[in-house]
Image (cartoon, rainbow, N blue to C red; front, top):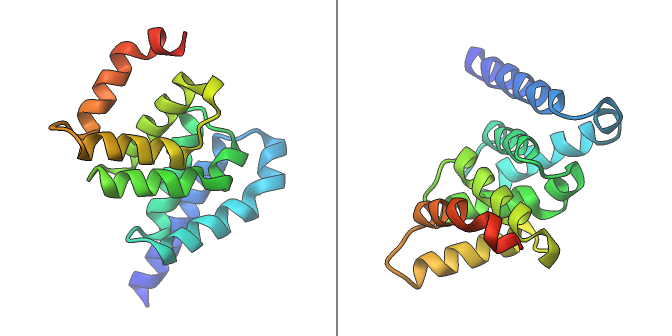
Length: 143
């Protein structure tokens, strides 16, 4: 019982952290949707609801909109983390870098995750190395 209570408290604290990086108007509009999404992703993936909420926070801090996180951003970041054997913070950062770099291409996080994972699988490099490459060329590539 104590373990379950601690996990619930940790999840609630993480949701508070996630909401703290949003504007007050977004909090009122999206807090329930983000909570439900984290719980759902915790059920549907190998990650817990707490980890999904942490990924939400990282995506928001990296510049994704709340709508993007809800409409596939979180699931794409979780997929990228799984495919690239990354921690969720790195996957969120990589996904946000790709989306910000190629924003004119209207990529979704899921598309970015598929492209990065496919490129890593088709070559002798990994997703972490793709991240470093993107950091070096993102300014030129976005142009």
